[in-house]
Image (cartoon, rainbow, N blue to C red; front, top):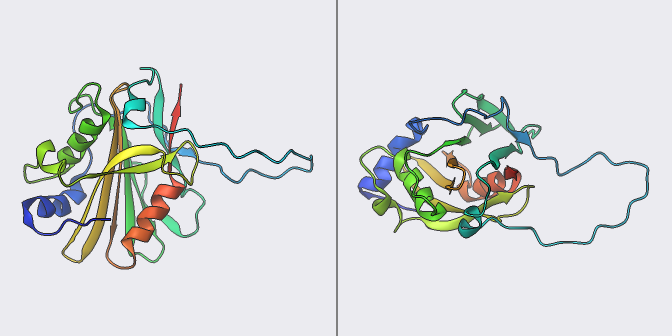
Length: 220
């Protein structure tokens, strides 16, 4: 994972972590708590056939354009019953909440909401870069972000994959290492992001855990 260091943009990102919520109309239908991703169902006594392994469906940037305008997109909460994570800031009513590792070294800030005011119609990739630029103080633009961002992935529907394409930047400054990734869904006017920042430990390993355990859930 490439980390950005130095320069106006890196400074803006570090400063901007404290003021991440987007301006404009927020997602009015966000539930009080995100969907819990259940990948460990309660076993039953009934015999079951061994499932055949099927490839995980993907949600590329191009696939996003095929979503119905009525589709519902949200984070699944993979940390709800995870003993290694705790709630640092509960759902704020504006689409944001934060988990932290129990040792206090890292946090994961989640957000989901409407992005009609910043998206580029029909282009999930560019709109994802525009989302990240909007999060930052210091006048960062989409043109600043795009050369520094890479394409990565969130989990799709269930935990443990990276089948939802996203755009990601990462860096360090003032003793903090961080990674920010966002995905815009222009067909439904919704975006999601997560920021992981650490003051100790392995930020890349924590990032991988966050992505693996918290899926993007799409219905409709």
